[in-house]
Picture (tube, rainbow, N blue to C red):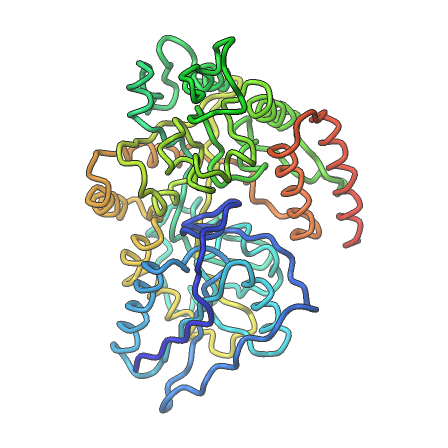
Length: 474
């Protein structure tokens, strides 16, 4: 029988790293990966689940560490639960949806009180770090049931092998790319950004220098002056050339090359390429003025926190999950990420469903998990805006996307971007993860809100603070 319990509905657009699909997360809500640390002093336990009807085994599905909370996604998840419960009588699947900003607290409290759910997801790489050590190894259940891992490449499966075992099975992927507003390029008389890796832009390398150059030309003040003009007014900008849409520092910096955030000796690290990245970004905000600062980004000019969708931004670097939140700009398309020193890196978000190792019903939970990524997979992937990890399913997914975006989007950009992932991931684990990520977030916020900074000094301060945060776990 159908019984769905919504603990809380997502109500508002969260501005920082909102991820419709991933960790990361994506909806008109928060990022696939929310990084607020659980605070036991302010956490209240979620209501205890009701007893399931009859003799059915209850399996609880917790949504909140990533995407899944906007109204359309809730409806799709409800339909999935309804269909599963109607198809058999041995398992009763119960859906629990918690707001992203309290999901970590809620789940922590549930686990501590012995009232943990069974399945968590969709959740990305970063979203799961706070609960490392609590994930069930799925390999014994794969072996027991003969579940076919051959539907994916070995590399895709191996992404989810950790010290805890096989903690997830491939499901949804969200490569990063450049979303661009065709109308603004047309108005400026500029060619569109390239859609093939290794291509030039108008006879120049498609690199970060070129992004800066055309970004300035595409940035316009209220008097019609672009940012290359001596008459340009940076206090009265009405159109920007570029934005890091719902980003965070590591994801942005990965365009300059992937890197390790922790040295082999356990100390924090900021790769040299990332120093270049943060200086490029800061100059773009405060000197070249083609990237909005925090005040502009939150203004009505930029849709109060959804900049690219305002129609007043020419290029946005973000992930495929951003298709969730495009309503105000119609004529957009996709381009490949720019080069840095000859290399291109498309940061990758990926979502799976996981099972907590506290589950009392691993067999039933695994049956539900394989249903979610199998029979229910197409509906959920569509609701989450997630590209299927299975190549065979991608054409059908993008055919559905064509119906939603009839202007004609070159989805091949997304497919090709999977060949240029960030290894190591920008969502890699760190000691004292949530507190460390919070410090990274404060650094990022400072870059966007404070003029006159010495960026390298800010990076040195970040490293110093992270060293102390790392040491708290030793």
